[in-house]
Length: 358
Image (cartoon, rainbow, N blue to C red; front, side):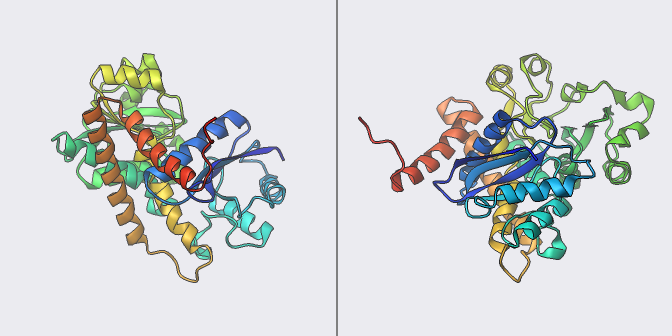
């Protein structure tokens, strides 16, 4: 087993962030994501610190359980005192349960199955629910209706599908979606319930069921004509070239780090507003806050309360960041980062962790 744990900052609490499994996991990738978690926890004003872990392995390997158990054993001096694993790419509720079992500690991981007292993240669609609420807040702030708004979603996985479901419920129109296997576009709107059912039955290959006229080249879902673009797949998918071709007026970052400084500047120059990742997709962190509290409890967290809190905090933070950016003349990412840094910096100061001036 080869893996990496990055504990970025614990001034506001113990390290909390997902563990991902992929053959190409790198230290740099995990370090970037750990820093995002620091800002995400601070942005939603919950008291945990930023951390992330990665396991360099094939999540479809028949040896997966043995690899996960080895990972837990090697980090037994860190879990759960300094770091509590959660779910990320390649890791499932079963894997979280295996970590708990290997260490003999119910508090060793979150994201376990509901039958073991866990929060059913994917069933509730907490992250996607928050992304949708961020989009709603940004549209309403701009004086635009949610009903009839045209939405494009890159990444029709747990986050993207839940986002599409919530926005469909609110009257928005899904015009494009993609999975790892391809992309689909229909300017007249896609049948969201039918696509959700197809995704549940066929997984990423559901796109093969689309009519030939609806199939588009992979990546073109980012540049279709729409009101809201939601990149909910992987990081670094929008570079300056893609940014110059995006036709949405609003980008809501469902994935972590889908844009970079250059592409954000390019979008801003074209009048495209962005809701930053650690504001828009913090629903999972908010739900994880409930899960962290429930690790040793005999009672399950109440799903309705979780979804209400995700909606309330995400909408509030979206408006706060966009208003601050407009008032100060900085990009939304800079406004969000400044807010999070102030909170982390204050916690470090109070704990005596800031460097003493020479």
